[in-house]
Each structure stands twice: as structure tokens, then as C-alpha cells.
Length: 427
Image (cartoon, rainbow, N blue to C red; front, side):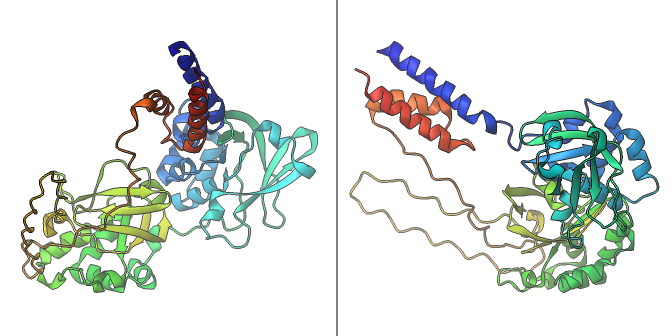
């Protein structure tokens, strides 16, 4: 009996390997780690990191990277701002899987495919698409969809593939179109005008009157990410009274809404641990953490959470993002009150005593400590049954072995059901 059941469990595990194999590499690629093994693409790889395009590539399940060697990359980057280089790199990231066999077997010999540049919404029409065409002599060319574009970029060799999620191909030259590399630098941006246009007038006014605007402008050259609360955030019923803060505390609060680095939304998704802000000291205070679920990104201060709503400016090395709520540091506003513990079930028929009233948190009148309502509860997965019938112990072992709580849990569940039915039929 035991031998038959063990054989059945082994069969289920083998079935899962066969079923799950095609999904094993999903969302697991790391383009910079792959390119580190190829020294001829060091410069291209370094610009992927500096512009954070690598985070955008890694965030997509299916992508083809057209890579430039150091000579071609040096020509592209010469005397150009990072913002322009970033757009060129985005146009080289195709949001479809193309390996050498697929390139040479294009239907009708040509196709259009979208790129990371198209996802920004900043390019008119279909300029964010790339034309791939089989040329004479077995060559494959890449060109912009702009009228009159030439196939100056051609496929040279395959670097690496993770079917069917990531393909890395070398090309001879960048893909360009008129205006692609003429992107203005962030240094020419007017922060207050951008914030006011994005519906963050109150935040812009506070930056100006407090003098923090000058601090942010000075930081723009090296890297700055700004989390700008919209005007509604300041009008919220649970928003603190900023008039009760001292001038130094207000400056600290405003600096808490910025990172001393270029960290766009795609990069925030990959952040682990807590992030230092421009208000952080050597002691590690005034930091925050990132909570990411799919495409949604929120910032957790320990007092409240705020959703990253939209991108106002993504212009390397400066990024401006709007947030739905004020970011309240725990050092100024105190920890969010913990919810009352749930009473454990009692086996005694005696009535439980009435709960002790909880004192209402004081309104933020003084500038010593301020309290904000607790962050809304985060959704949590449904809990598993507390126990199972003793007769199903072997079935539970199978469930544990296959790990149904994986991204391919549906396939695992089907396999478990099949194994359960098969084992139930054993004598």
C-alpha cells in the first residue's frame, strides 16, 4: 500500500514539472545580471542601470532587448542627456518575444511591434513602435515607423534567450527618428509649474514659502524623486494641522516627501526594505517602505499609507509622482494606534466583561507629537482550513509537496485532485 502511494506522489510531482515548466521563468529575468557575463556590452548595461530602464524591462513578462556593443553605445550616448538616452533604450526594448528563428520567419517578411517607449504615452501616433523586416541576403532590419526611416539597425547575433519571456539580441546601431534624441533636460523644468498643473498647488506653495524648493532644485542634477500630495490630501478630514508645526518641522515634513535618488515607479516595485528620504539622518530615521501589488504601488510611513497615483515627470535623473495622502513620518506624528486584540473564545458560560473604553487620540494642536488614524487594513489571502480529517493525511502530504500557493496554483490543484481520486481508488 505504502509503495503504491509513494509511486502515486512521484507521478504527481513529475506531472507538475511537465505542466509548470513553460511558466518557470516568468518574471524571473534580470537583464543586467545577464549582460554582466558579456563584457562587450558593459556600456549599454551601465546605461540601463543609470536610466532605470532595466527595472522597466524586468517588470515585463515578455520582452526582447536589442543590445548595442560598446562602440555603438558610445556613439549614441556622446554629449546627450540621460533623458534622451533613456528614450533610445526604451525604443530598443520590444514588448514581444523574438528569437532568431522567429525573426527569419516573419509572416509576409515584416511586422510592427510595440516598445517600452510606446508605453510612456509621450510619443505621437505609433512612433513608439518598431518595424522589423527581412532584408536581402538573409539580413533582418529594425527601423522607426516614422516616414522615410531607414533600416540602419540590423540583427548581428543572438546573446541569450529564456523562452518565451526574454530574448537578448545584438544589433548594429540604435533605432532613431527625428526628435527622439532632442529631449530637454530636467534642469530646465519648472518644478512649481509642473506641480500646479498636476493639481498639487498647496504642496508647491509650501515648498516655495518654506525654502525647500531651493533644496530640491539643487538636488535635481544628482537625482531626485518627489512624492507630491494632491490638493485633496491637504483637505482630508484626517489631515494634520500643519499650522501647529514649527518651521523646522515643516521643512522636515516636506523633505520627507522626496528621495535623494532617481527612483521612478517601475523601480519602486523592486525596492526591498525601507527607503531613506531627504529628511533621513545617519541614524536612519525618517524613512519609508514600499508596498507593491501588481501595478499598484503604495508608500508606508508607519503612520499611514499613500498610493502612488500618477507620474508628473520622468526625466532622468528627476521623477515627480503624485500621491493620494500626506506622508506622515512616525518621528513627527507618532505610531498609528494598534487595533484592539480580538478576544479568544471562552469555554466558560460566564459573560465576558465589557471592553475598556479607548481614549480618543488627541487632535494635532501642539507640535510635539501628532497622531493620525491607522492605515486602512491591507487585503490578506484567505486562510487555509485549520485542520483536515485524519484519513486525508496522505492527501495533505501531496498538497504540501506540490505547493498549491504558487503562481500556477490552478495546475497544481488539478494535479492534487487527480492524485486524490487515484489514491482513493487504491485498495
